[in-house]
Length: 93
Image (cartoon, rainbow, N blue to C red; front, side, top):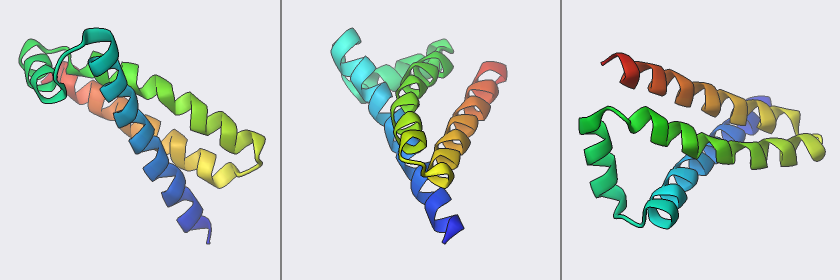
């Protein structure tokens, strides 16, 4: 039961991060998602786009905290930590 709640939070965190990236690219940059990701990878700024997308993780995190769904909030934090690790890897490669 607990692992299921954490997994749900993790999936919601990953989805929120991807949604944040998509919203940033499509609304702010007004470009195609795939094109921006490939160009960002070439230029070494992919980590910055992932970090901007991770900002959207605040929303489900605080909703879960407010509803006292602590294990789902923990899953969102784990997804955010995974994003941070990916950002760290992209900065050094």
